[in-house]
Structures are given as C-alpha cells and as structure tokens.
Image (cartoon, rainbow, N blue to C red; front, top):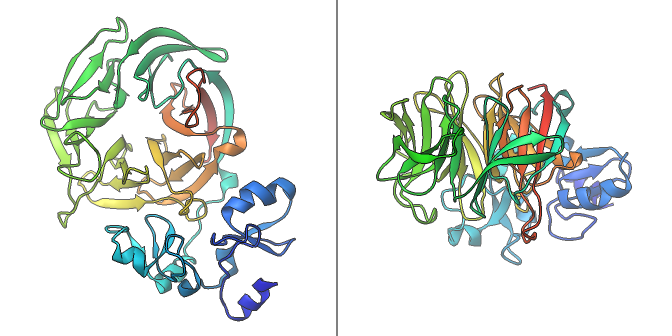
Length: 414
C-alpha cells in the first residue's frame, strides 16, 4: 500500500484512503492497514468495524512533510506552515492574503517536534455518567444559574427567553418566565440573579418576586458580556465597547468589582501591552485565584481558553486538542466552569465535546459527549450536590417547537 512506501521515506501520506480527498490523515486502523481522516473514522470506519484497533498517526513517530500537503483553499499550492489557531496547514497565498494575521503559525520542524510532547491523561480515568435527563420548554439553553434550593434559571439568548424552573422527574416546571434578551448570567451570594441585557449596568432579578432592577455594578462606558461571582462575593465582568464584536476595536477587558460595586482590578493587556482578550465570552475562577476566560476569536465562533494568575500573568492558552480540533472541526468553546479540585471544564459546541484542563490551562483530556447521546452542549453549571449540569442547544434550522435537553452528570477523575 501507499503507506509502506511512505514509511521508507520517513514521511506520512496526507490523503485519506477512504474519501480519497485532500483531508489530512490522522488515524490508522491496525487490522485494515488503512489510513483515514478523523471524519471518515467517525462516519464510516467505526460504524462497520467498532472493535478494530485505531492508532493516531502521531504515535507512529514519522514526520509530516509540509510541501507534500496541498492547501485546502488554494488549488495546487503546497503548504509551508501550520496554523495552530485554526488547526490547519496553510500556503504562501494564505500568508500573503493575511487570512491568518495574528494567529499562531508553526514551522515544519517545530510541528514535528511537538508531536512527541507528553500525552494527556488516559480518558478511561475520567468518567461521566448521565444521572438525569430533562426536557425543557426552551429551544436553546445558553445560560444556567443554579439556586441554593435546587431550582434553576435558564436563558435562551436567541429567542429572548429567561425562565426560573424547578426540575420535575424528566422535565422542567416553569416558576417564572420573562421575555428579555440576555448576554450573561450569574447567581450572587443573596441567591438573586445578575444578568446583562445591553447597556452598561448589570440588572438584578429577585428570585422570590421575579422583579428586575438596576444593580450597583456598572462598567460604563463599556457594555458587559459575561458575569461570574466568586465565593468571596467579587464580581468578574467581561466587557467591550458594544456594537459588533468584530472586527476588533476598542477595549476588551475583564473588570473585577467588590460586593458594593467598587472596581478592584482590570485585566486587559499582558506585560508587552498586547490584548489579553478578543471577546471575553465567559469567565470562571479557581479557588486559588486563577482567572479562566473563554475568548471568542472571530465571527466563525472559533475560540480559546486564556488562564491568568491573580496578578494578570498568562499561565496558559488552550486552543483545542489536535486529535479532535482540526480545520474542519475547530475548537468552539462556549461555557466554562471549575471543579472543586480546580480543574477546568469547557464545552465544545459542534464537536459535542467536553475539554478538561488543569488550573493553568494545560490539556488533561477531552470527552466525547456524543457517545452518550448528548449533542450540541452549550451551557454549564455545578449543581448543589456537586454534579454537572449541561444545557444543550438545538441544531440550526430546527423548528420553534423543538425542546432543548438538560442533562445532569455524575463525574469522577477530575
């Protein structure tokens, strides 16, 4: 086969042997001696040969030759660099057109050396199990906030719906329903709900009465995007100038306030005066004070996770896992939470994954929720008993009658 001759040259062929396309191969079936891309592995091979042993080509220990890879966007052009941000190989025309300006670009030698880096923990050590499944009255669950009594606030940004619900057997029972568009949500120490609705001030919803008022938290002249409240009552707010998120203009910042609304700190630039964030979509913190931010990078919803020390130093930047996040399947993080053991959990929307990171943003592993029947995971929250809630969204184009699923998961190993 083609693979045998390639091995003699110490190279890896780049064309998938199943789809015969230009998709870069990523896996080899030991039993079939077949090379394939991740898409064909998922859609074809594992459906007909579930018990076959699959090996990542990086484990074979051979180098990838960049100039043998044809650019996906420019016909006939050989690739010369790997874009770590987009997880794809690019050619000189890509560089000349400045499509990847500001992205992390990797040369061939560095790319091949990176393949021998230490692998993450084995997935078998980390387990998730669905303990409960609920059908909701929302088409999409973009936000979750869990109250101390076990009730829950859920928000649908697209259809401007906010509901306070109780969880009953296999469905949600609505306590309060509001027609309001929100951009962020968090529960405060008084068990009330902070939301962003446009404008510079956060709004406060009294969970007992459902009444909404202005809060004391104001990031004027900026507009708040995301909210996170810590156990010591500090409020972290991701903010930007308002209007279109891209192209990037103006300030992109995470503001920290005390319980009274007094500003304590801002995170905006690194030590070289470069932006820390492009669009701080979601914020969380660890018990040791690290700040974890889902940073939205462009209108295609590609993103990364930026982890900062309390002093503002960058501890780590995570752009997805190379085994699963490719040019065709980019890392699309949406929500983030930290576990009691200070690990970080991130939803990866269209890949139906959870990514697990250390408290400094290094990869531990990823978990395929699709194997459990959980698709399009979006929102995250910890329950009052320590389990994880995952709120899902509906597939694009779904009818208004579609009911989004909420899952409660038991977990171990993180």
